[in-house]
Length: 120
Image (cartoon, rainbow, N blue to C red; front, side):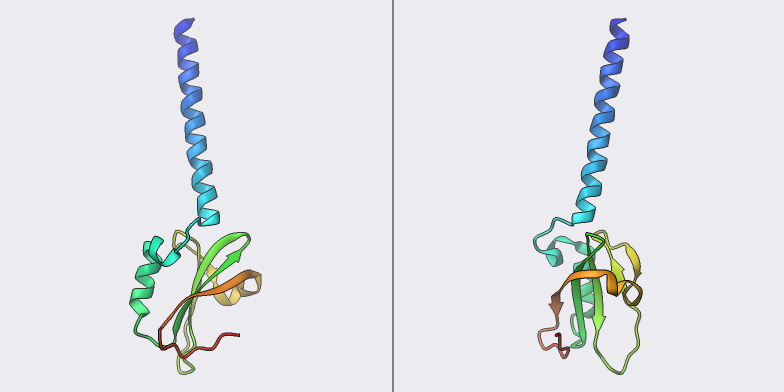
């Protein structure tokens, strides 16, 4: 009887612990609790490093369904490109042109130091 009780308590504790980790992980992913996303999100820093010499490139941060998201932009009138909305893990949520109307709190987080884009 005592063995069964100990086993039940151990399993309950392990289950509670696992559920806590899942909850914390999900909540962190949605809120993206970072104060400096460029420095704290390795995938974002790498993406910026890839375009850091392009005067037409920029990155924005926004909210999409209460989740912090990011997207790349390029204002070069001579090119046509596809941009994606990415979550804090760098996972694609959809195309910017399809989801743009649902974005809120849009703000510029990076542009080339001699950027040619104008933002309203």
